[in-house]
Length: 305
Image (tube, rainbow, N blue to C red; front, side):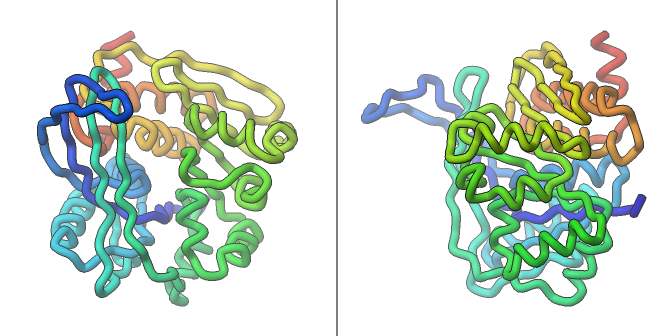
């Protein structure tokens, strides 16, 4: 198998706050600032893969604002290759405001207008030579000529891993080409509900389940995950831990599942590793708490058996 993964998506800065009592609509709540760290779901997953020893390259548009040096330094520290990320003059980087309340989080995404992403010849070749492209539908749509690119990647045998959250796609019917081109689709609970309930969703779900070469995942937080592949289904329970911060748990799960798949592990073994990695990550603060060497996850698994 080819030897590297391309993570396609823009990083940003996560600002953490503690909200002791989540307000009702129209009410007020007192929040307390905790810290600001570099995040972004695609960059998080890329850093985790890099720490596992997978050569991972980021394809992204970085803003040239005051956060740029911090973002570049942080991602490089995890071993993520930034050689193919472009810096866009006059563009601001994304900022996310994360409110921690009880054992959950609410994230407010501040999205900035970005110019269309026109791939250079080198960036196109990078994508076509990858073992996997890890991304979202929304990030693929920002690339000029994305439908032609999608066809080309499938033709070249490049695996496409879609991280699907509810805000990253329109519905099953409108984004059908992306779902059908993907090799691995990982829905979180709200995203799957939207996919299944929206236009074409039930028929699309049936088509996905009948595609034997496709891995379809539904992550359910503390309720574990369900996975469909080659006509079979299995579910795994989540590892029981006391959570400190659930931010990045999905990114950790997805990156860890992809790591196991790239290693040639049995799918159930890869999924068990992924659920353990995600559980371990939420016992620490920060969106990249899962970005540790493989041995640390294995030690966690041994210590919690």
